[in-house]
Length: 267
Image 1 (cartoon, rainbow, N blue to C red):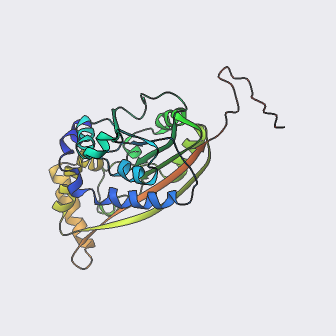
Image 2: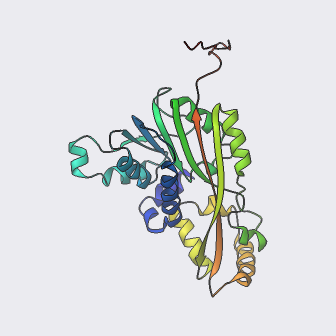
Image 3: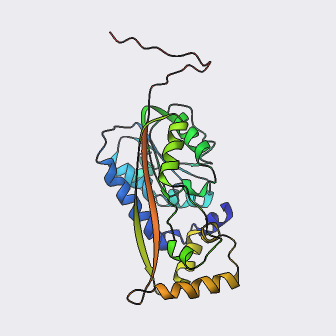
């Protein structure tokens, strides 16, 4: 999918309605936690809406914009103001995979990831890497698509759509990666389209059409979209996106790197 995201950099913002809405809802969740991070990272940052919002919330923190598509990072850099550049407050851009971050261990106060982790077949290595780079007491906050995404197309007979992990599986992965006190919840956001072409266009401009719909050929697509037409409500085609939210903390380690248990004595 890397090449698809590279091609989508110029058109991404035009259709990133869902990502922007989910980002706003994630930001509202930050109201419930008290942190003062020295470094924040938006991982899978796309064109940078998330890191810019984090800069507003945490103006003293060093902002890191991380994505595996250099063209997306070029958009982040292009949108930095001249004043941010002058004051050296523009986001620091890093081209990297979430499973191999170019960061020292224990350096982030907040790791943020909006609608990216679901593109990994197995998010557990990413969670382990995020746990590594967070400082003790640091927070991971993320969102991901859940299994009810595009349930209308599944009901219409689509067989090639990507399968997503549910929130219970993701919570178990957080625990397995060493996070403490994971909190998971879920909601469904419904978009509406005038025609199947609108959905296809949006996903193409986002760079995720093939990743989301899978190897859906012309004949299957025509069959599925014809069946989807029977679900119209008030002249529009519903398209549900299940959004899974999660956050968890990096706790004090219980074992040393050599496997010995750590016992803390508090005076």
